[in-house]
Amino acid sequence: MRIDQGIVMLSISTQILGRTDTVHPVLLWDNHDIVLADTGFPGQTKQLYSAADSNGVDLDRLNRIIITHQDIDHIGNLQVLVEGSSSRIEVSAHVIEKPYVQGDRRLLRFTDDAIARIDMLPDHVPESFRKGLKAIMLHPPRAAVDLVIADGERLPWCGGIIVIDTPGHTSGHISLFHEPSRTLIAGDALMVRDNQLWGPDPETTLDRQAAQASIVKLSSFDIESVICYHGGLFRDNVMERLAELATEGV
Ligand SMILES: [Zn+2]
Image 1 (spheres, rainbow, N blue to C red):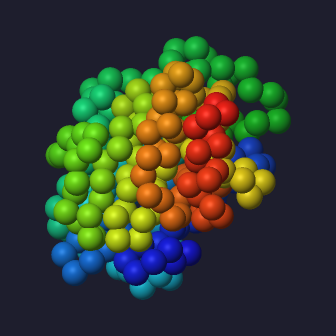
Image 2: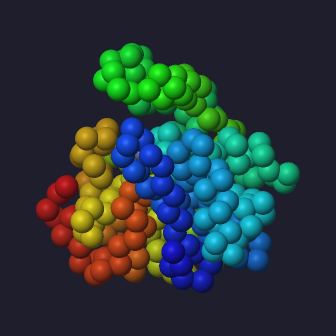
């Protein structure tokens, strides 16, 4: 979905145990750069290509990837995109997330417990799914982080992208503010559910107090549209809703 000139929200879906899970990476471009913010679940590279293509963007020209945080639905196609590219793709992430994205540390959610729970999935879950999931958890995609980006930094790509530290969901989580379109790429710092904007899913939020402080911080930006990785676009009186969330708590 086109948000403004040079920025589209992609929508890519996958079936996970009979449930459809849709995520929303964001593609930004100008004459110099094509930037992808987050990369979907493992195995969605083709979908990314066709989603970009249907928006008139050739992903073979992708030269930058920004990762909002380490979770598997965000880094899923990172390695394939980087290794499959004939030209160099520069990968950016927060310093806290860097060792996870690079595979130097095990992803926070892929604990021994989480891996052991695969064997406790109900009987109807196919063996192929268990095996696939275990393989991904033991050997998640990885890529070198070339550029560490930090709070307040203005990336001079695609008209200007401000990096905003929004810890909570993970401690190195970042959001991005695209200046020309006044679009907040919220990652998992916010979500859209039932056409309404909400704080992050409490169940997957590692530090709820930090997550709330991040919402307060986001409410100080002059935002017209919000793209949430889960739930997609929200552009209905964004500032009013953010102010509500900032005072009410999530
Ligand atoms: Zn996440």
